Image 1 (cartoon, rainbow, N blue to C red):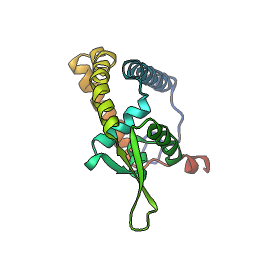
Image 2: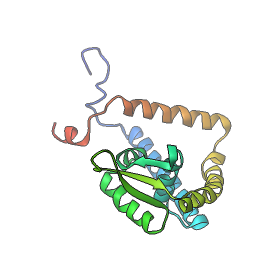
Image 3: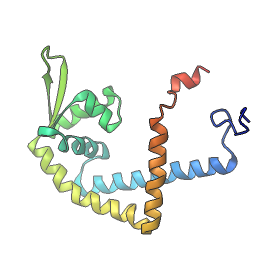
Image 4: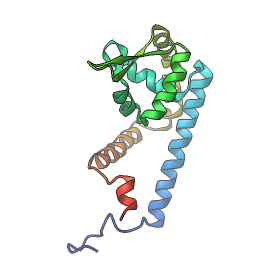
Length: 169
């Protein structure tokens, strides 16, 4: 207990019930992601990673983003993105080029072929999202999921310590 009589949130381990809820969340969210990725691959021949990159680029002005921005958008480290983009470029889905006054920056553009593949895969993907995720809930349950995910996003935005800081305690 803290000086205010409230439990110290950051210093106590989760209870058995809290850990059960955490594990249920992780295992279920991973199962949903795997099911959606498998359906996307089966329906269109592209990976979940391909789709995430193409989605981010399709929403960008001129279908182009700087590599660093794209890495942040899809939540990947830059080296992972670079390797993935190389494979996508070999398949003609994206193009990469240098940008900036010194040419040190890198930009990624969704190619015309990539845009066509993205559009053709989106309808099947969205149907899978409905079947695998949305249809699992009543409208009230779906609203509750939105509340839960909103709380998680707000909590993440508070600037939780990174792994290096936590390990160094």
